[in-house]
Image 1 (cartoon, rainbow, N blue to C red):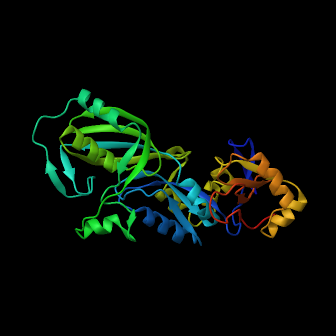
Image 2 (cartoon, rainbow, N blue to C red):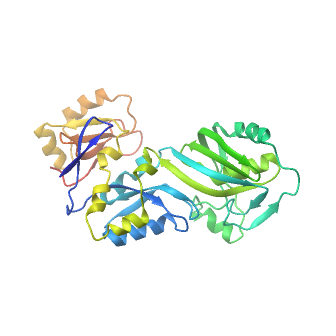
Image 3 (cartoon, rainbow, N blue to C red):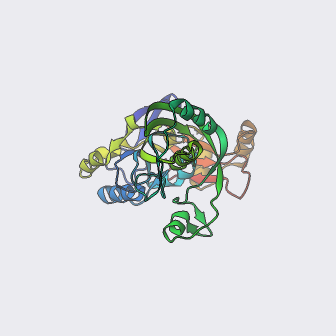
Length: 324
């Protein structure tokens, strides 16, 4: 086993050694343009002969940047990663509106009037900071009556588009040279940059679409941690890709932690249970915790997730095997 220092918890965290069976964790990919997020998953599954693999947070085919990949047991924690904030840099091209709200779509309107000034754009940006409801784009993977919105759009069918509460933590204008504006956006999950561009164009009366989009970060994972798909391809006949795996316990570093060192608790955990007395004691320490806490061994291995105060449903415990 090799250990990297886990800055979230201040101790070493075990990483599976090359050749370990059922290695699990996260890979951070710098997605190239022209591929869907599913394409990236398919490449990695084939190259590394993975049993289970998925991604957290879809990137459109034209977009590039951070795509977090879940390997094997990490697919079971994807729901806790999807909720994390995102950070983007985008180029908004004003003067042209498209049906997909990006550069891959068909032009639906062209502005022939005067260009808005930088001052007008800055005032417009003020409307899109903070928490508000954003309309989901027509070309989105959100399902309505069991069918994805983009499927309705491609078939020319009209449906009522849902609205979602989103939060924009940061919206900075880096450069404006008509017709292009370069923006940096830090937002909550579920925020659509394409819809932002379209809304800006509509508000300014000139139309707009996304010309380029790059995800700089997804939760705590940044481009500095990412490897390109070409780099991963060169690792497929070696064990080096496993050294890039982010361990499960680090991936869930934003969740509260309980370290289990008692042999009696470990024995019960191997059977998918926890001692009642232990649960009562720990529940008293996590009265304000509504989500799960990490159950971690003394050497930093993620043993499971435990819900001390589940709000709905019967789930209380999820075990990650093999246990020590």
